Image (tube, rainbow, N blue to C red; front, side):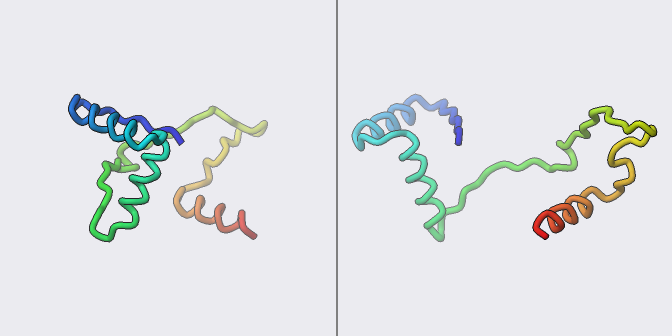
Length: 92
């Protein structure tokens, strides 16, 4: 797992650095500790931004056509149902 954090507050950067140094732990261990804290606390909630998939999705077109001129997946009208059916059939 890779996690990038941009902290613009110099004081907060120093406090985190001192905390890690004082505890003599790796940054990965600190992140695991923080995640455990947030997920075990009933009152704590992690807030994060999400994107609307319909607004941020793009269509991938690899220009794949069969020998007969049939474009792959052109018969799929409802992608959501098709993907669900594929997942169900994958476990059979």
